[in-house]
Amino acid sequence: MKNDKMKNQYRVNEQIRVKEVRIVGDGGSEVVPTRQALDMARQQGVDLVEISPNANPPVCRLIDYSKFLYQQKKHQKEIKAKQVKVEVKEIRFGPQTDDHDYNFKLKHAKEFLEDGNKVRAYVFFRGRSILFKEQGEVLLLRFANDLEEYAKVEQLPRLEGKKMFLFLAPKKAGVAKKSQQKRDNERREAEAKAAADQQAEENAVANGLLANAKGGEELLKMKSEE
Image (tube, rainbow, N blue to C red; front, top):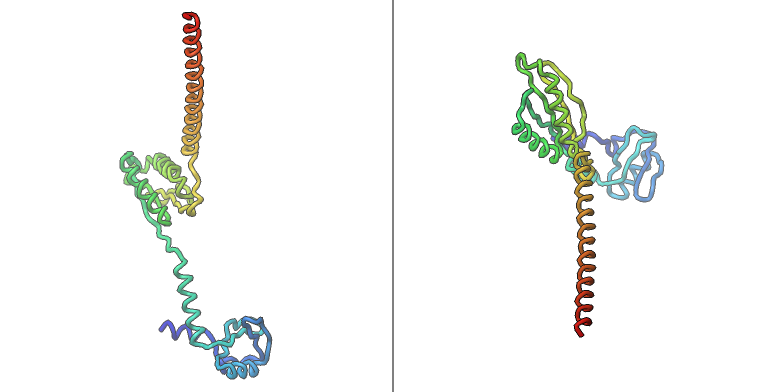
């Protein structure tokens, strides 16, 4: 069925009834009368296949039609294989979610984003809990901030009925931006390491000078005894 549908997409040989066509190939292109193009196809033992009917004149190729359909089918498969199917994963919170539940859901959100999926996080307000909508907004903004390395915000928290939604999309692999907190931590660690290295070097110098001083004292003592 699919093959029949693909066959009907192209006009071939006598189905091409325009006055002239543009023949394209490895050697370039040329505009010739359609009758001449058909004669060229017969001489080469191939088909005249119209590949761009809306061009002026229409563009055709001299190729075996079965081979042409195979190439088109293969090309479509390659395109489909390169397409990444993006799913939207949901994370649900209550307006007063505790830290344990929050961290559990944060972990799952990271996994979803690393797999290339989008995340739709929302806070559900049941009954009078709608009074805590500001608290729900703070929770979602915290969630977005904690996922800064993994995601970009597509939609900030927005209340729709009894739900407040936050939409996150994964960042491209290899370009995840470090959070400010992580950058500060790395800077402090680097400064602490540099300070420790400097202190160790100063201690080594001091110990060397002390050893030299002790050695000098012992040498003077030996000379006085002589």
